[in-house]
Length: 201
Image (tube, rainbow, N blue to C red; front, side):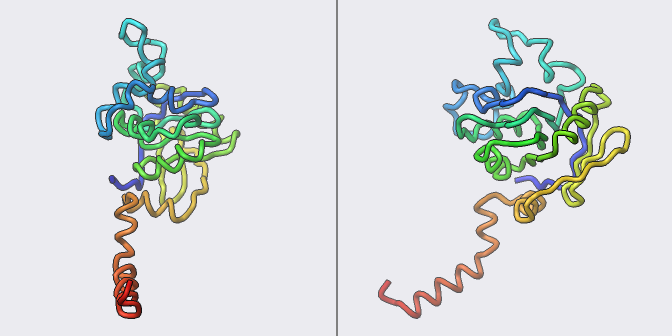
């Protein structure tokens, strides 16, 4: 998993409340177990017309936002079913950070497992960031995970809170397995002691 330290990129405004995982990646794309290739299907029901052509009004189809790395979204992002394909699709498109006032728990946890920062801000902070994101190609934000700050295009800075253990997971680029392996010496020591103390097990 790629480390997340500092991210600078265009932020796409998506001020919709209750964006669920079916909107992020519709059910017909859930047959795959690969984490790649889902970027083209991200938000497909909003991105494409019925004939498969792009909807020019959808934010990620606009030239200024095609390379967006950040999404600034409405409240309760990632609600609905628990499909992990949702963060897979975001990551495959190139999104490394989603900013909202709240996230559904399972989606929030899945983001950390896949190297995406789900950043929780206050409603007041979200309004400022949405205003920044509306600037098109000038909608560049810098997210500094170590400093826990987001800097806007005019230099304004907001601070955010994050659980220290989750922060470290992203800074070090650790998935669940890699995180567990960090404790390998302790695990091995425990297993050796158990084998010595209780050889019948």
